[in-house]
Image 1 (cartoon, rainbow, N blue to C red):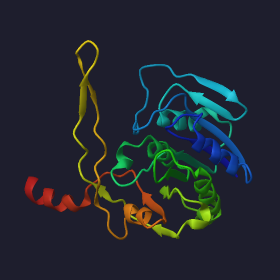
Image 2 (tube, helix red, strand yellow):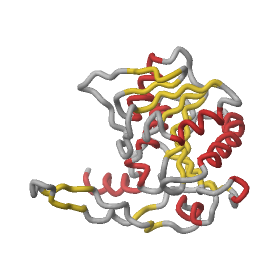
Image 3 (cartoon, rainbow, N blue to C red):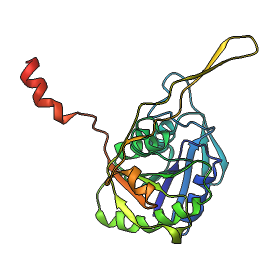
Amino acid sequence: MKFLLSNDDGYFAPGINELAHTLSSIGEVVIVAPEENKSASSSSLTLKNPLTITEHKKNIYYINGTPTDCVHIALSGFLKFKPDMVISGINDGPNMGDDTIYSGTVAAAMEGYLLDIPSLAVSMSQYDPKYYATAGQVVLGLIPKIKDLQQSMLLNINVPDLPYDQLKGLEITRLGKRHKAEPIIHHPNQNNKLMYWVGAAGEPNDGGPGTDFFAIKNEKISISPIISDLTNFNKLDLLKENLI
């Protein structure tokens, strides 16, 4: 098999390099990832500035752009082959519930899916994780099963930060939901000009059984099938009845 790997942590990040090492045992791996950390860049594309591709070493390239730039460029003419799968990650930290809206990790996989290639977004359950190798083994075990489905799909995978043999199973989940983010943080700099930081993500609001939050809380792998269609189907009939 042939794999395109990307991420939002940067080409140098331990997660993507662990994944590349693991997958090299079953196929050809090419990394095309951002030159620097681009966390929370969502599906942004660079449209008004030129992008450059730099070869770091054999089959490892970095681009001065976003995760979506990386996958789009790789699949739209840079690579000389069509990958069997696009995998984004392994991310330093979780991408559950509303995180998926902002996540560059999920966005990179989404771009692969939009370009008609089965794609995975893979994230660790906490920041500064110890067990990237666990997520690598999880992906390695899932690939033949996903391949056998013979369908293009986009899966958001979160993995507990535990040794592989301590995982308590796997659940197919829906995305949960968080409370709204914490308030912004601001402090004056040395020139007494206020500097602002986005507040921390909210705690889970909808995190009961069946959600990604619940699976991770119970030390299980969470796999959520997601799609790009943002239509709120529950509101279609209401709007047709009241606006037309």
